[in-house]
Length: 204
Image (tube, rainbow, N blue to C red; front, top):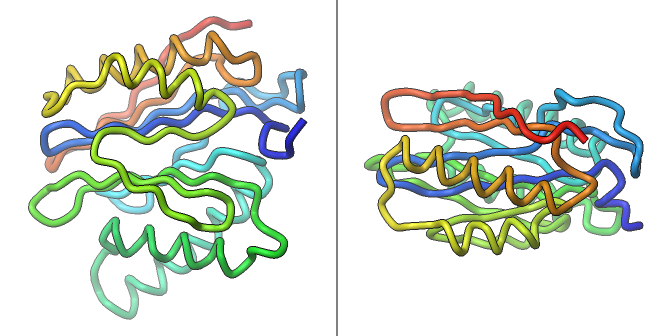
């Protein structure tokens, strides 16, 4: 078993019309044993920028703390929030810095940039960015997420349709992966509001 699969995870971010959604499962396991069923993989950096970390849970928490620290320093120095593109570059640089003993994480970054344009990206454990205009996935359920998102995604979805699409994609994908699941956690972000919803899924 790969160290990335040790705790199990499923992460997906999807773009809509001037909005985006980011969703994850809620299971924290140690290989096939379930430890917690309310684990948070998605964190808010600021109102228009969210970060999801799949992979090894301990490394995810350490990396998140470093990123929050660096973002707060940026806010103090620049007196503004970081743009999603800038934040993606920061995450990439921090991961690449540790490339010889990497954080075993695959980040998913989603945010609203200038003129409310949604930005999503993911990267590997040494910071090689993968930008996308539709959706990005990460975690142990990534293969089934690719298939579900590929078949369900439509361009310019309104917020509620986007929520429905990402939720169905996540729930159907984690059912095909025994290391992730136990419900879902979805953030739907528009220029005016952030909606957080918990999904109930199969509890086995």
